[in-house]
Amino acid sequence: MLNNYPLWKYLAVILVFVTSIIYTLPSFYGDHPTIYITQYTLKKTCQELDNILLCQVKKILTHEKIINKSIVLQENKIRIQFFHEQDQLQAYQKLSTIFSKKYQILLCNTPNIPYWLSAIKAKPIKLGLDLCGGIYFVIHANTKAVLDKFQEQYIDSLRTILFEKNIPYLKIYKIKNHDIEINFQNSNYRNKAISPLSKIDNDLILHAMGTNKLHVIFSERKKNAIREHTIHQNCTILHHRIHQLGITEPLVQRHGSDRIIIELPGFQDIEKIKDMLGTTASLEFRLVNSAISEFEISNNLIPEDSEIKLSNNGYLIPLYKRIVLSGEKITNSNVSLDEYNRPQVNISLNKTGSILISNFTKNNIGKAIATLFVEYKDSGKKDSKGDAILIKHEKIINVATIQSQLSDNFRISGINNLNEARHLSLLLRMGTLEAPIYIEEERMIGPTLGKQNIIRGFTACALGLLTSICFMILWYHYFGLIASVALIANLTLMISTMSIIPGIVLTMSSIVGIILTLSVAVDANVLINERIKEEIKQGKPVQYAIYTGYRKALTSIVDANITTIITSIILYLIGTGPIKGFAITTIIGVGTSMLTSIVGTRAVVNLVYGKRRISKLSI
Image 1: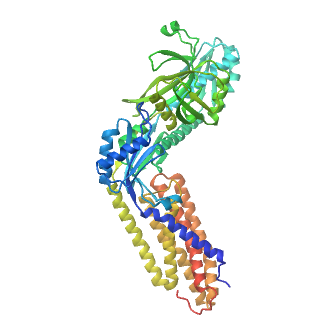
Image 2 (image 1 turned 60 degrees about the vertical axis):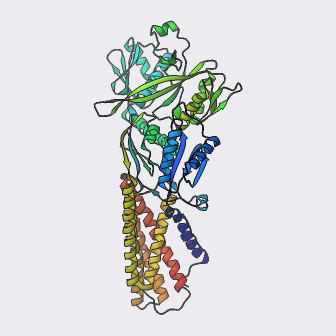
Image 3 (image 1 turned 45 degrees about the vertical axis):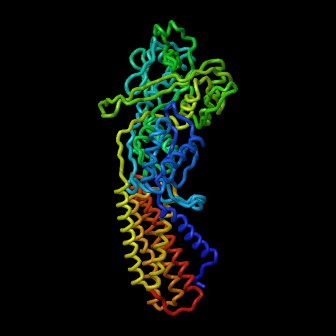
């Protein structure tokens, strides 16, 4: 028969449709007002969350007669869900009064979905700021500080190569635009140095200046690559920090050359987020220069490769400028006690960090290595470009002796107390930013406007859908009813797909994309139905008319939809914010509409009219 699907095709269509309904359901359950209790990020008084604290919180809520849906301890966070916002706010005020000095108390919303849906990873569609309210930040990353660090590293490399090649020099110093200048005794030494120094990096440009100077220049390509990597790493670390607070779907994206946009839909506590995001601290592991005496320190007779840093105890300790290992190479850390019941921090490194620390410690057993805490603070002043001027603060928090060759796991011992160890471990877990940051713009968007947008958006969507259904049924009768069912199935598929794919957020522009896609989705069925009507008018048998109508309309449908998809992909690639949301929704909608209009309606038509002798169609 012309119009008949094998059984597996019918089952596949049913499976897709049922699955889409299941994964659409979480979007209709709404959210629960929620409180998270977490550790402070950098305060040394931070304490672990345990079952004792959980019991204390339960007793407080019971005593205050505050009704809650659930309270659980998971992933070192206590999550309390409520039925009503009033209970959430009452609990927040009470818990903040008691625990705010030791723990962070955070307000947010969490999905209200049954366990069986959670078990199959079904989640509600993520709403953007314009729909559910939340917090919006524009963060400026100080890439200049990173270029300064690279400049220091290259100076160290230049100095090492000149020493290895036995080429004397007078001075190496920084000049403007992150370039480096080397003074030699004469032109012969300078010319001799050009060849080995040029092999350090293909992006370093060497120029001979005057009779004895060598100008080392960073290429613009190198600087741009460093900036790109820095912003990417900062985005990753900020996303990780936000995830630790229980916010699973934040929007963290690059904006321009040195800015990052963060959107936290549904989150309400702006001050706590600012404290967490504004943490610009990082760690550096450096070798102690034990060859420098106290007399040299007190008289500031420090060689070029070293500098003096202050320790926790107020002592001046000479460190080599070369950074052995930095915080971004650390993947995990935790606190434990050694054999003498003293606190220690266990550290795990990534592959690059493991190779670096292994090679270094192999050749420096018995030497002292220091952990340097580096933090940038806003001075309150602006530079000529209007950017905040950050002041660098450094302090040695630990000095330890290298006892053996280290690998991807090692420990920091000699820490004063357990709280300091927890503080250090938490700092390492939350990730070290490549570049210091400061919050340039912040906005709190209330949920009231978002509710109005949701109501208006769904009203427009329902009216558009209803209009299309009425037209199709009135004009094409039974075939119009089949097309209307496909239209509803298309909407269900779109919602389920958007809820499954990570990173997709429903905004007002996305709703516009849904409405537009639904309006255009009936075009495919209009083409198919008109083709079938033409074949019938020409006197073709009904079964043949159905078969030919679908076959001839297919090319036009595919061509039109591919053109729309290509345009939407271009919009997504070059657009930002709302344009991206509109583009990705359109791409998903076009894909699902092709599936429902071509495959879905054909399955229904085959099921109803296939294997039957009919002389007239309701079309």
